[in-house]
Length: 115
Image (cartoon, rainbow, N blue to C red):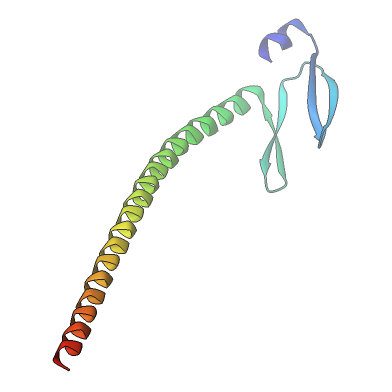
C-alpha cells in the first residue's frame, strides 16, 4: 500500500459482499485505513499505526495458536489414556463376571451332587 501511494495508483480489489456475491472496487491512494475491531467497532488509523496494530495482533495470534496446539496435543493424549483405561476396566469386568459365573456353576454342580 505504501509503494502504491508513492506512485499514485489506485488499487483494484474484489471483496465478498454477501454469500457468493463479490464486488469489485478501485481504492485511491490514502494515508488512512479503517480497521474493524469487532463488537460493531471500526476505527480509522494511519498506515504506520495500523501496520503496528496488525503486526502486534498477528504476533499474539501466533503465540495463542502455539498454546492451543499444545493444549490440543494434551487433550488427545488424555483421550487416548481414557480410552485405554475404559478398555481395561471393561476387560476386568468381563473377567470378573466369568469368574463369578464359573463359581456359581461350580456351586450349583456341587449342590446337585449332594442330593
